[in-house]
Amino acid sequence: MRHKRLTFALAALLTIVLTSCAPAPSGPVSRDSSPTMPTPAALTPSEYQTVLQQSGAALDSALRQVAQAPTYEATATEVTTAGTVVSEVVADLGQPVPPVAVRATHRDLVAAMREFATDLAGVEDQVASLQLCAAPSVIATLSTAPSMERLRQAAADLGSPSSGQPYAWGEFLPAPTPLSEHRLGNGQLATDQRGGGEGELEVENGTDQDAVVSLSQAGNTILGVYVTAGQTATAVGIPDGVYDLFYHSGAGWDEQLRTFTRACEFSRFDDPAEFFTIETAGGIEYTIQELTLQPVVGGNAAVSQVDPEAFPK
Image 1 (spheres, rainbow, N blue to C red):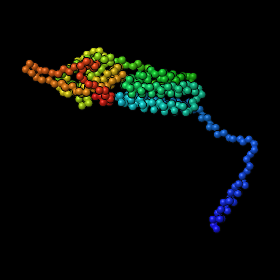
Image 2 (image 1 turned 90 degrees about the horizontal axis):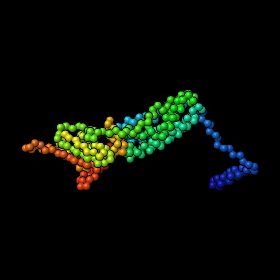
Image 3 (image 1 turned 180 degrees about the vertical axis):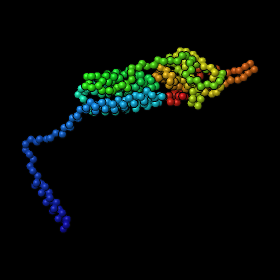
Image 4 (image 1 turned 45 degrees about the vertical axis):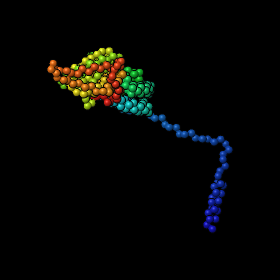
């Protein structure tokens, strides 16, 4: 039957396989190790300069984007992006074999870039906590970081005659810059979009931080008055209307960005401020709003912290 023939053929095949096996060797067995990967060839000076140029261009672009960030949100985004770019640059610089004359300097450069990645991560945390809240303070902090000094030294060593030939890298690194201590004068207007009016706003700042108190309508700042720590300031000529009332405190005022650059706090008074003028037989009556930025006994103004991006422009 067909079933029997299949069984027989299988048995024969098994017999052939078994009888064809050679006896296992009785002596020691030699095992070949994995093939050794060839060592990458060292780059020529021209090729190495190209690697440096590519890494420098990426880092230069990332730092420029941070420095040009116009808002807090943009600053936070660009600092995170810069961290990604720095990690990629570290990986790219770790692959090639540089010319012999600059191998020690190249190791220093890679080590400094790794340290810079750590410093940048620390700055990102400071931005998230509003200890650094604008681009100028971020760049100033990075410019004085220990890793930045190591990067400058590596750049100088690459350009020295001892490197075999001068290599160009690092011209974009920021010079050491101190954190800004700039302040406006007490009562100075940081923003002024007023029309005519009679209202007055008196602000007492009993805190240890300078502040800007803003009157806003429809998300736009109509008036912003700077009040230094421990001082009282008065803004006059406020038009009749209902205003949202905000204040922004911190250090290192930047006049171009119109914001504090570090140790920032963004707050809003829960109740709006209303200014009105009434004509009377004896002349006019107008509103004088009085505010304190520090808690006081009997105070009736509730304040809430707000996201920096919700702050009026």
